[in-house]
Length: 445
Image (cartoon, rainbow, N blue to C red):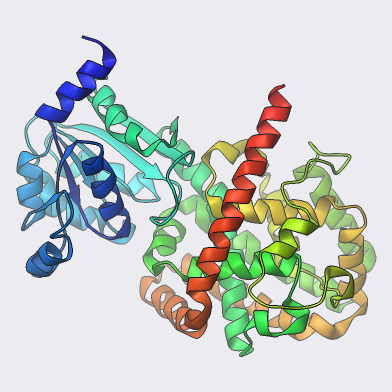
């Protein structure tokens, strides 16, 4: 039997189950069903009839509870909030079909694997996965992590065959490797752009309506921040709070923002310049001639939510939020390019923006001059520093409820522009993905 014949046989004999039909769970269910797999799913028990009506026209079958899914499915994917993974596996894990496979789709694998080891029968294999993108992003070419924690070759072939329909770029990691890399590529990203959103909200300004926030780098910063606030709060809370590596990084980001801002208001140009030059040498040492950037002026100008003057006429900005990103990487010893294969679309955008700021000749030096001599952005930078420290405090305390409140309050503030920001952000992601592929091709040539 050929591999393709074996896959077709699996489609006729295996059932795929998904517990949790939120945005990602439903996306998986739709894609697997469309590829010819038999898929069943469930969501909250008290919303069974509502969920059944919602997906009445979809190809997969909605069952009353996770028990029903677990009893018949050969591979059960828990697509639930990271905060609740232990509780939900405790509830449905004992019902797992004999000899089946279980896995989760959360952004932090340590609590997920611990839940499976504790609450599912010992004869069950464990293969988790994590699509490193949101539910509305085309899965083609995006990173998909597979964690083969405990599995036979037959089980692993089944899961790989199943996810092949996503046409993602598959990466096999251990749970520990996944969590470290996920923290490296996402924790500081989220901290930076969550903080931007809170700072703009607290100063009561829509940045795309303010001339000094329009154009160039500002376009990317605004688009990334609004893209994050277009999603559900638990997507980011799970990574930040359940992953110990993320705690360290978010705390460092707040510390970097505070220390850099202190140098700025003290007019300490010498120390500020030395620190940022050291960060540039460490993070961007691969690109000493500042060529082959992921982004350029043309791309940055293209993706705007507002209309404003060209870059040359914009008010200079200290870009504290971006300076603190690179300083954090430097202080934590992270080379972001090492994890580009496991990076999210958002990570690639802000890596491109940070690279543009630090590697475009003369641009970093102009930011430093503005930071110490021009008070125009001082109030904004102060508000941003407060916001970064606020997020660090929420995450270090593990306060899900305060995380949710802070996130949703800011989300409501930006609601009128989120749909447009998503559309613009999707175009930006496609452009940067193309740049990444071109760079990889030139490096391998």
